[in-house]
Image 1 (cartoon, rainbow, N blue to C red):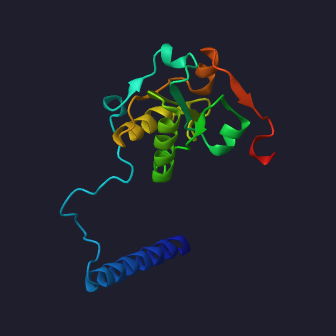
Image 2: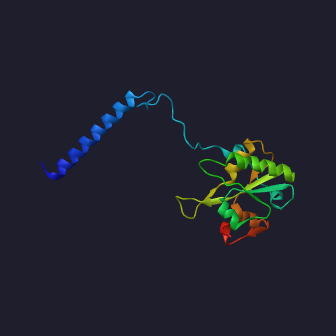
Image 3: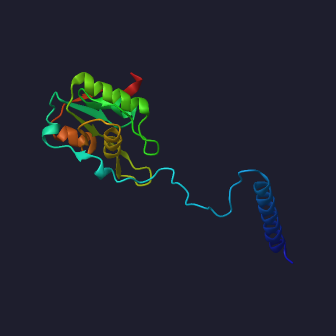
Length: 178
């Protein structure tokens, strides 16, 4: 038997032995991981139908009216660089959503400003496809709506669309570092 065949055989034997030990240890401990699931596994980040829970912002929502609270779903760093004038930052995580404290803060701010509508905007670059944007606004608007924020909606197209609609922005090219 050649050297390469011996190495492959040894690797297989080590892998098989490790698998047997792992299964034996798992079976010996209470609450071990079943070899076959008795029910379907829960998906960590379920795909939801956000459209069922949100409305798309209208042209009137994008006129800079005082009864509309604008919420930026991008990172705090992106918000610091440029955001719609008067907007509040509520960073949205694709995996975890917005923190409960952020939702409560938006509710309080909407009440303080007597906002009849909340318009969420924001996109981020897709990590797996350069040049493609991921919409953060729609899922955050859905989360706000589910949390009881009346009039929650999303603006498609992110900050660029907000600027195109004529909303003024606040710029700080230095970002959060200044």
